Amino acid sequence: MRFIKLQLFILFIFSSILAQNETRVLFVGNSFTFYWNLPSIVESMAREKGVLLDVHQSTAGGASLKQHWNGDKDLITRELIESGSFSMVVLQDLSSNPLINPQESKVYFKRFTQLVKTNEGKPVIFGTWMYPAISQKKYDSDDSIQSALKPISIKTNTPIAPVGTAFQLFQEKHPEIPLYTSDSKHPSPVGSYLAACVFFKLLTGKSPLGLSRRFDRKDEFGKKVFLMMVEKGAAAKCQAIVEEISIN
Image (cartoon, rainbow, N blue to C red):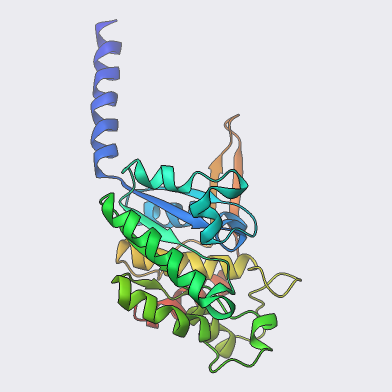
């Protein structure tokens, strides 16, 4: 009995040390964030490389940052941030807002970045991609969302996760591999894997080269379930693209 108690005590101490070394991350967004388990994939990538991230999400389909701020769609994003338990918060607005509704996007990025910093966290702006329906509107560049977000990034002193830049480069080099689902808007598994590599590099400072191509967890019954899997060649191409992008 004493031996069992000693083991439990050691396990408790070890778990407490691990918890203290974990970085808690909150992803705020909509389906561009939650497709193909993106937050959990980022967490799994980090753990594979020995970095302990405890990743959570506050997401709802079609949600804008304004809706997150107002608590629409049963979202409690502000309350989660105000708890002060997250070291990093990734902020994703409705994908087209920085282009078609720039004033609203600017207002709510500013509000959220201030809220995160007030609660001792570091905000990160999710730079989403120019999907075909947006691209057909003929904006100034192929990476117009990143361009629209740059002034917000500078004004709020907040880094951008350049996922859209990674998408653009990947499509130029590997047009045969689709980054979108059939709606030509949401990310395919490869698209979400590519985005996860960007966040992995930004949040950990480590190279994505050599990451696994598939990640799994156990469900509530202890059975293995796969969060995502992509072909080996596609994974390597994603890693190489992100490796060459400057991410701070």
